[in-house]
Image 1 (cartoon, rainbow, N blue to C red):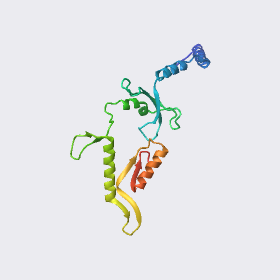
Image 2: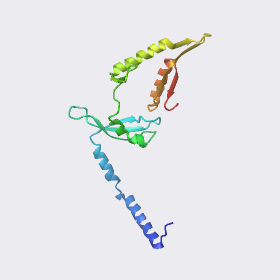
Image 3: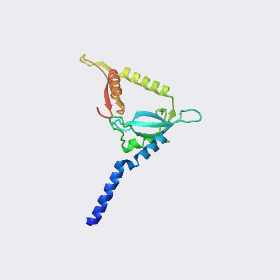
Image 4: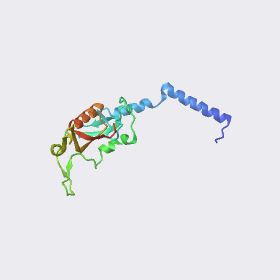
Length: 196
């Protein structure tokens, strides 16, 4: 254990007391740091969003610079926790704090791709093509496998060959609508990342 004389103890105590007193009187660097932050984000556009990583649904603030004009390419330059969000109150886990790297990753997929059966090549398709293909395949499977009544005549209206996995980073309203859409189609295999 550290051996300290009475004189050394009094010096450490007096120094700590003086330092904390100066901070309470307003000599702390907080204001200067806040001014730097305000200056850095002064010309940016703030957008509220939800962290995409896990089922907690933390709120984030994204700051973008540029408006998409030909001389100012729009880009996210800073991400932080939303202090007004009831879930995380401004804090972020290490994954959420690294979202800027997620956004600017060269490996990030930004458009739908399709790989034909038996092929090794992915082909870029438009969003309209992707959504039309998904809707067509869902309709074909539902029409072929929808069970309206059981063998003994009970009405069940169920579709057992397709399932749905929902993301939990959305709001309660999004979750409610997702559940209603899945159940209205007759889906029984419905799960959520948060298991709610």
